[in-house]
Length: 518
Image 1: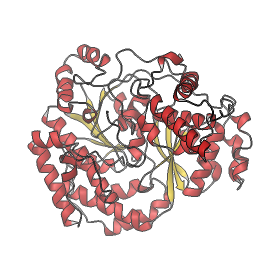
Image 2: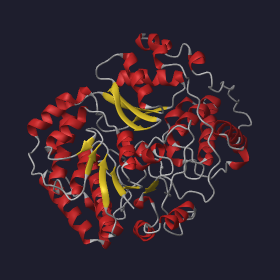
Image 3: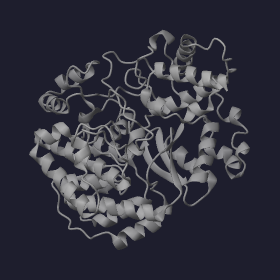
Image 4: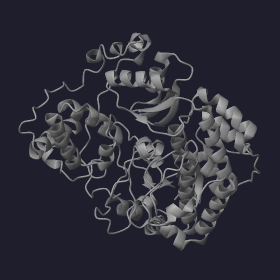
């Protein structure tokens, strides 16, 4: 089996204790964490491994440099576990700053030098202090790029092409909010990403120059494994590491193309070197039926990897095992994606680009990606009804984009997105009990997803059990917000990670009661 290791970029701060088992099992993991700690101390930062090894769920949010190094520690430790258990990659791919983790894992850079370069990158971005944002949009790159071009600002660009229906636009905050309103008028799901440093835009040129001027020059090795760069569109050769990291700040990340190229070249499994499905969510959306493994999201990561190694000699046995995972976490589980509906919106791996504030970790394992998938149900979920997208070319709304007033953005949603559900009159507070709300939610979600309402259990995980991906959850929360006249519900990110109708119903009942008591 030809496996590709994928390294996430800016994701949520890892859980406390996530590396406890790996630290106890593997000498290579202990040595690597020790080296990261040493580099951190030399730069005036606290030990990175302490919180990751100890059973401590708290994080004191010590700034982006610590967060980046924690993500690095989790990625490189997972890589060492995979190598120790006999999984050898045909290539390693990193998203955004994850390319730096890939270089270290492949042996092009030392662990210490990768840590120093990550901190130097964070510092120049912080010093620039650019007021930008990143917006994930549930459409292909061509449409997302057209949407950005309507505004006609040099710093507002398509930043990432992640999957067939998941793109990211980066730009000044005021313009991102304008783009968000246009996307909403078009009926395109969107979500602002809570990242420490919005990147992949020409606005980062100053930070890129500063990094080239101030970052420590580091020795560069030949490397043991192949590294594929999503922004350069080729393998990394003898490129200068500082130039690689600096160049990525202003360049577009073409993850979709990279994934498909590797698969076409023979890669048949993608393994996430991170805590949750992030990059693998892009893979699943880009290559229906591909095998994706996320060891750290399983109840026993080591046994999941050993099952992968043991079964990889018999592809038929491997596929049959993956097709029927346990729902109760009573055995190693490796997920395989099902072919996606042609019109389905791809997963937004919220954890891939969001910080902890946007994606708190649920009690039981959203993506990246990202709401974490619990073990998938044995029977495939019913087909998801495609989200209608207006066939009209985005340029049709050009007059909207250039108009400065927000009302111009939403002036003609009916002609652009005729498939949108008509708003329903908000209920009165009287009689708005839990059962009433739950019944309405089942109907609303069932109509949107094409599921019979009775199939939607109040404690079923929306993503884990029912396959409702993150961008669809964002769109559905907007409809719940309109239905019950609760505008604040749209921004309640905890409801994305809670992922059950029970939590949403309880929140609606409580919020309506509070509104009635005012």
